[in-house]
Image (cartoon, rainbow, N blue to C red; front, side):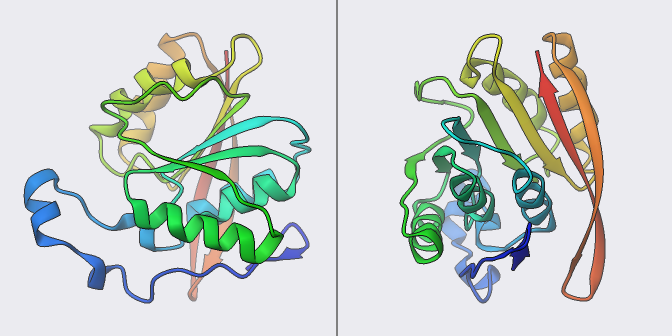
Length: 200
């Protein structure tokens, strides 16, 4: 994967469907979305490749296989990669080590019952609004993760149904949004991804 003039080798599952756990799905409707490299993750990584993140503390929500985390590390950031799946964290650590010989901090994170993880200069997320019910949960979570006055959130989203609701809820919480439209080519198809930068 070429991002910002650099080439990254990102290992991911050959088939996300093969990782489906029927018991997990019946209990919590959990699906292994983490196992794919989504166009929004590529768009977020490209966006981050233009940033100087030296010394900035970042957290990625739903890191999946970790491409944005890897790029943020390469740009000088200190990154905490989080996901609801232990396997996602394992892939992210492997991809960071194999590309950069660096290891991000990791934490399991359930957005609905979050633990106190500290405050961050950047909250990063790619394609996390795939279910409308995620919008209010994330709008409640993100402000508490951001450092007062300086924190920003960057969300990459391929126009999911939950995105307008999330942006509206963040506006109600005092955040301003600027948006960049990106075209991502992957697997012979083109996907338009909106990268939203939110500042209080």
